[in-house]
Image 1: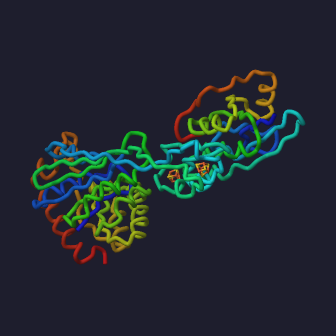
Image 2: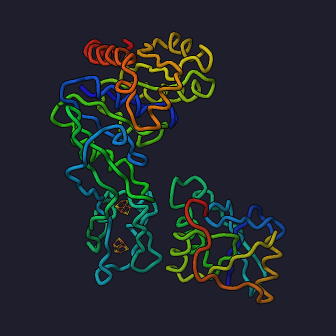
Image 3: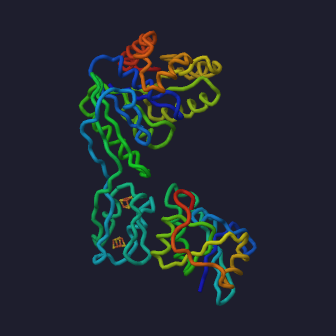
Length: 120
Length: 283
Ligand code: SF4
Ligand code: SF4
């Protein structure tokens, strides 16, 4: 299973970006092989609107089945749910810390978006 | 003739200028409130709203039985308002601009268009002034299509004063397009100058002749005057910084009614803008 983390950098020690829709990158971690790849999300950063939906498309294309991020707006949440992708929120500081929490089962699956509007 | 009243920022007295101007014209005139996110011209008029017309835009509705999940619709939509993850697409109505493109590109003809309400256009008669006002539904970001709906009232060539939204974004362009001239209202402060300069830059691209109204003259410096002189933009009216004006405003009264000594100023402005429309302001 692959998990996408919203990330501000290129490795697992990078800060976890708190905004799903405006995250510059996604670090897509494969739990089976313990390898990861980094996918660029710059197109969403430039989007005038629908950045969260664009990000959801990026994640769906990466093959990830779950997303771990800080916040995820309503449109992004709907798009991710539509794509069958689970969402986990955390305020862990880095991707590695978020990954640990995920592995130890400490993250709860989000049932709805947690921020409204423009942000995510 | 259509005269648009605009400003680089809210709170400069744009609506005040538009409504007072309409008031002194005396003959039948349309006052068109295009500030659809915060319409307030009606607060200064005595009248009741009559007709109200609901305005919507066409948004897609997907027939799942026809859709094969090809994703063409989502690839077309630049607003991310429709997106498919290999199945029937999701629609995000509040992001849709109603362009109709997704329905056109769908190879399965699975998309039909349904109306989604974005706001209303309402009308008030107050003596010779007819106010046409657009009111955007709360939360709808679709100001430009509503502004276009408001402006259909301009088709019959009646003289009109148009209260544009503040700022320098798409809705402003939608409002001032097709105006014969634009009055920019600014305050004589460093911030006022900054906003005015941005507005002038944007308006120049539309090619519409410009004039400036300086509101609250006396509170700042003369850099707005100097800017206008340098740019060759006529200053058509200077409204002094008079506490009584603010008081009249807070009671919903017009300057020209509450303070008759200012009536002449607005009459002169009306004459200048009517005349300068024929001759071309700033040319
Ligand atoms: S009508 Fe235009 S804006 Fe709306 S979903 Fe279709 S392509 Fe996108
Ligand atoms: S273009 Fe038509 S057939 Fe293809 S996903 Fe969209 S609605 Fe379905």
